[in-house]
Amino acid sequence: MDKIKVTGGTPLFGTVPIGGSKNASLPIIMASLLTDGVLEVSNIPVLADIKTLYEILKVLGVRITHIDDHTTSFNAAHISELTAPYELVKTMRASVLVLGPLLSRFGKCQVALPGGCAIGPRPVNFHLAALEQMGADIAIEEGYIKASVKGRLKGANITFPKISVGATENTLMAATLADGQTVINNAAMEPEITDLALCLKAMGADITGIGTSCLTVNGKDKLGGAKYSVLPDRIETATYMIAAAITGGKLTLTDTRPGDVTAVSEALKKMGVEITETDDTITVDGRDRNLVGIDIVTEPYPGFPTDVQAQIMALMLTAKGGSTITETIFENRFMHVPEMQRMNADIRFINDTSVAIAGESKLKGAPVMASDLRASAGLVLAALAAEGDTLIERVYHLDRGYEALEAKLSACGANIVRLHEDKEETKTQDSAQNGTTAL
Image (cartoon, rainbow, N blue to C red; front, top):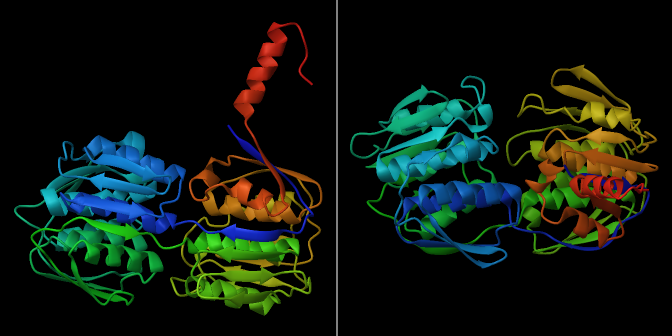
């Protein structure tokens, strides 16, 4: 299993190109299941989650053609399988998004519960309730969601009790081929939702209210193919913004959309970070190390994103004065705190949803373990600011959401390297067999 070694203390300078959004690419690619035409998607990041989705689509019978590293066409004209298997779905919660398109187009499907998800407090139940309102019969049997509908799904007036990005995406896709009008109230407003809706419109869907909390969809008998380019990744953008600030460097991020990270920019400015923007670039100057602590609360878009919570926590550790973070989106989103504490971070829990960060922590390198994708990014950022070496384990989480992270950081001066443990073990075994010792 790979590890990442970071030697901290080096300011970062340079230019970082931002890739396409993972969280937009996944549902847009799944939208290919809604049509027998060809959907060509560009600006797709090269990530583990994307590769997993390709494998799921191949099982279903989608013909996938790679045009270049970041452009792929999808042809779902000849779907041969309507079951998304647990072996693939278990690694990626977003896999449940095949449910709406398959059910709407084919009238039945089976999807494994993603990641061993238990129905209840997790929001996958919002997906199922919305589809049931549209006429679907749904049962949970042997770890699978089994869904069917007689004829076509019917338009419905759906109100989510709580904002859910995934449920909004699944319902939106299902509604495009439903009979009649569907109104989705309390819809998520993330830029990735807007990107999906715009792609669906390019395929011929009738959608209004895009970018608002109320989406109206008039179902069509059929959707067609299209060409669509995925928007830039706002979470990757935010991560590199914080990388500049935490190392006391200066980075220019290109091919991005400043308007999508306004909440992050405002938080960094309050801390004392200098930020300048153009239409598609953000320059972050962290050379003035006079950072101050702030308080943030994670919220649905356009509020401060939960996916940047771990990263800004790392920055708060280097600021003067105290900070607090209140997490309102996900439970168990503070699993990186004990790992940061191993690096001499001064963090204490106020309650189950809030932490206090003392600031001016003298971070020191240590062996740490990543618990999830964004926690991994937070640990890398903390390591960049720490004294000495930090060894981060379970970095496969990073590969799910950051393309070429080490290469991008190294190009800006970071001392970061990926260690391939299997190869090291092989070398050791080979040397032992030859009667020598590997140093």
